[in-house]
Length: 328
Image 1 (cartoon, rainbow, N blue to C red):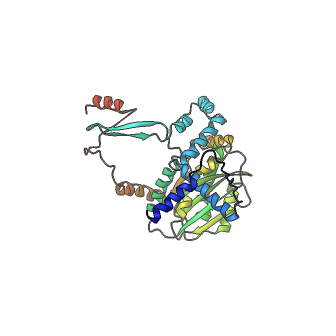
Image 2: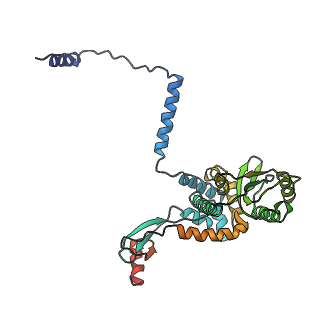
Image 3: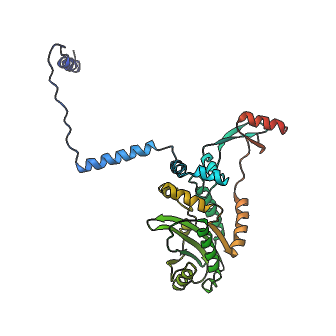
């Protein structure tokens, strides 16, 4: 018998205890973790939580939170009284699907409904990406570009009238002497909520050789009913300014943290308003840039059969009935 097999038999014999024999088992007493071990344990727990959330988009999480708060605040009752459909469309966004089918070969796929509301966490990133693409074309090769930030005192209650007043003040500023050398620009309105109330502020991208921040502070302050206002004028040297100009009206992560009543107040105030505008020669540049984007953008891929004749319905059977009626 080899040495290896003998040692194996000896190992078995040491653990081959009779059931009648008593076996003393030492209890396991874990030692307290050190500070480094606790830190490593927390890191592992966070990683495990992150993996659990994989596959669930953060936009969907924010949307579910906003849905719950709007329902609690009475958004459904408000829409029933006013006859508006924005809350029903918001509930359908990312949840209701439809079917797109090729009328020739019958190939199809499911697609989800999009509400395209500028405060919706599932849709605002698409709006931001389109705006970023437009501004990249507009400012390509442009010189003397400035990033301007215009702020005002916080307001306690946000209404549609407040937003329209901010737009009116911005248009009035364009006619001021301080903006005499500004040939054109674009502006984006952003909202945050702090302990002191609502804080709307403008991010502008303008083309001008020089803007005096002190004079701008006084001019803008008079328009918003203040002695002076906090403003910023920054020279644009790289594309980092696009991140500010193309910001969402409000971040989904921030909107979901607000109390239910504030979310409803904000959404109602935002109805029927525009938070992005172009002026001066930027308007003509924007029209030209949109045409270039359409030409440069790759065309939608056709069906596997090579055609682009699609029908849309509730499901595949519905699409087949539509295709039959249209004579495909």
